[in-house]
Length: 157
Image (cartoon, rainbow, N blue to C red; front, side):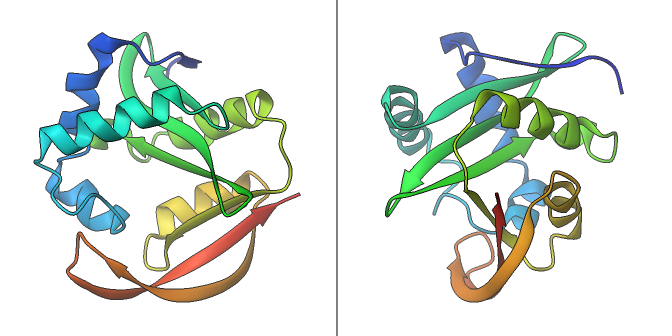
């Protein structure tokens, strides 16, 4: 797997993160994505908002010193939720599990919430390994798939 680490997101990371978040296979798997993953202006506006948010935490994920994704927490309706995105080149190598474990040490808020497309078994496995437990499901519109799909809701602590 190599050494996985978290660090602050830097301006120089934005091009790489934008490219990762446009990967068609990753977009399909994540399902709940930007309406248009190729809209750089929307991506830049979203990242500026996330980076400036006082009630959230955003970190770059690196593996062997190379940027391979991001992980973040944010508050929605008074609940802190987490999200992460990893480059497909590191899928299946334990990077997501290690990054999430590191992030849980940074973000002490509990409970934490997460959600994933119910057919995204890899992400659900990562979340369960970290101690998240399913609390239910809901059907929501998934922009990446252009239809409503089932999403699993999870909670830690």
